Figure (cartoon, rainbow, N blue to C red):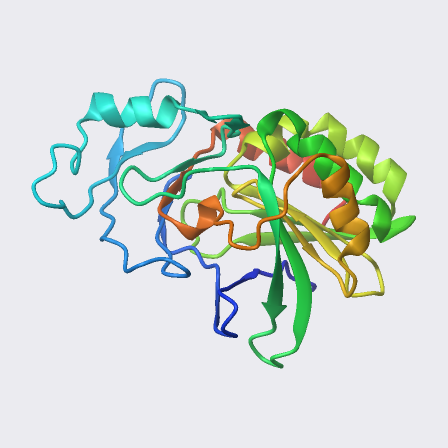
Length: 271
């Protein structure tokens, strides 16, 4: 089975660290990463109730100089979760930066490199953050360079009892048919923090992801066709840009998205 890759963070020194998830609480994931960041404070998740079946959580971090903002109360933290706009950038419902050490979201893209952990082979990559109102359309536009037929990998972390993501594969699907189907599930793919999808060329090492963080990630020997799509959409290139997965952040999901994921898997015929 083909697996979705995890991009590597690169600081230009040749030292890369893969993006991995560490802590999960129900449908919400609280993550901490050290890549390109100073040592982060500890994260202690505490489950809070919700009336709309949306998983939320309290974030506790090490205080700095007795700052009154080091330990947010529930009202302040829920206000933080409710905030979706950072300047001109709008987040989807799937993810929020952490209270204390989150990366401030911004729109743009950067060139990066995927390093295979076993073979050490390196593949050029692009990581892009796109504002909610045009994220899905940009994702669809990035699929065109993959050609007329694609393989699909659906990824789910809805299973609260499992520490591993589940993956479901559909091989050899006509791209235009696939695009039409994906538009029917735009809400799931855009707003669910437990769903990811990768679309791949059936033979060449080319892949486009819309991952759980709602980042767009491309792997391809030539980045030019994909960067042209992003440039046409007005996204600035900034190879020093940090993305939300590089700091503390929170994923959210609803039980209805688990059901929608099952519907999408059935419609795709993914096994």
